[in-house]
Image: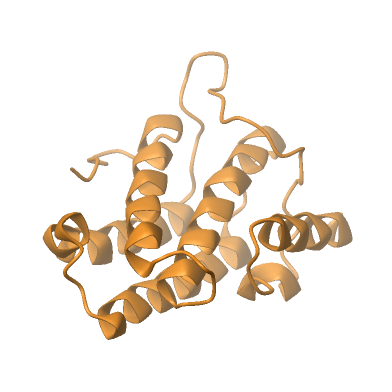
Length: 157
């Protein structure tokens, strides 16, 4: 299963034209699922665990602190790189520590893929502008809140 996850993560990032994701070499065994569309658990948000809530909360916090600059595209290259690095770190921790049931995990992979791609873009590792990566990261954390149960979660605006 770990090999399938690594292959999935690597293929996702490669398809997006990015480098190898930091979490691809992790030993965490997430369910891979097929790339697709986010779904709810029979109309209900997916259950989360403490490591996932903590990591996503940290990602949301750093994006919220820079939200005005993200919307106005006024962040410096260093600020985009720092945001991307923080997202990479938090995603690696989430992947290493969270323990979700298989279907929830498959949905989480879609969010994780978006976050990894956006972090790479913010760090200048793709042809897209860093500002595009920051907007995509904001969209990804907002989708997390739409599909995963995280008490007190508020979308970024």
